Amino acid sequence: MGCVFVIINSSKSLWILHACSLIHIFVYEFNVTVLQIVVQLLFITVIYSQKLLILLYWLYKAVSTMSETNFLRGYFVMNLDHLRYFVALSRTENYTQTAKMLHITQPSLTKAMHSLEKELDLALFKRDGRRVTLTPEGRLFANSVSTSLISLDKNIAEAKSLNEEKTIIRLASLRTLSIKWLPDMAQRFLKSTENPTIDFQFNTDTGLSPDILNGLRSKKYDVAFCSRLDNYPDLNFFPVAEQTMVCITPIDHALANHSSVNLAETLNYPQVTFSESSGLYSIMNKLFNEVGGHPIVAYSVEEDQAIAGLVANGFGIAIVPNMSIMQTMPVKIIPISFPNEQRILYMATLKRTENQPAIASFVNFVKSQSKQLSVNNI
Image 1 (cartoon, rainbow, N blue to C red):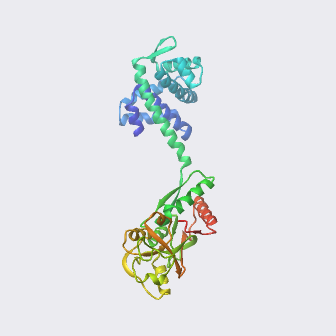
Image 2: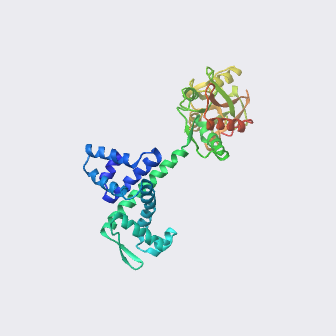
């Protein structure tokens, strides 16, 4: 009923404009005749408002003097341009200036304004040579038409945008990958694709691999980037990046002057370690088992960036993947001479699902770009 209320609350001239717009849409898009529309409006009038009788009168007056096709094409389509000309002229009140601005001849503009005034049966301007001034009726009409045209242009733009609706690829990643690696990969894909409607939605969920993979499994995400975990037989994992494990210490720590360390040398110092919920927990256990000991756990957290922050503030040392963000932090990054271990990060997708072409294209692009793993470029 929104259209009806717009019509009721408008001036007589705008009733005609809105009605013609509706008739144009129904006749050309839905093959409804003007007579059918008038009958429907009559039915609405009986139920809702006597004011629509006035609208029906003006519709009848217009339809009775011309054929359906001429009414729609001549009145509605032609006068849409005329209304735009009228709004432009109402702002400049100068025929020469307005014609130049609209890239039409002055006689064409004059003819259009005469035609509009004749159709509306209103004097819109007082003329004084090439200059004109709006009549009170013309000023009221100009304000209403200007507002209506803005709304019309907005609705047309929105309607056209439906044909260009974006395909959203929902990504989830570890925060480590979301800082540099993934945004760079996504941007390179957008530059390479011929489909301008593709866009991304970036997510980090809780920042933990199990939660990210569960979100992928439940189809909350389309593609995930995280650690590879056991017990996910329904997912495909493809390696995309590699991080070397390093030791980090505060800059004034006893190990800070070492050029490299054996992991066994770290066992005497309190450490900030990964909690059991982290995807790195099993890797750390494997590393320390190889040197036959376990660290002194001062603090246990889930994410590598949080660990680096604690180390930078003197809460202990840590064994973490090498991250570019640590170059900006007050920590000493020390290579581990033994055991030598890398953390592999993966792209994960559902096995038994047919992805949209855009998603499949992105997955294939990442695979092609990751044939040689990105090492410590995260």
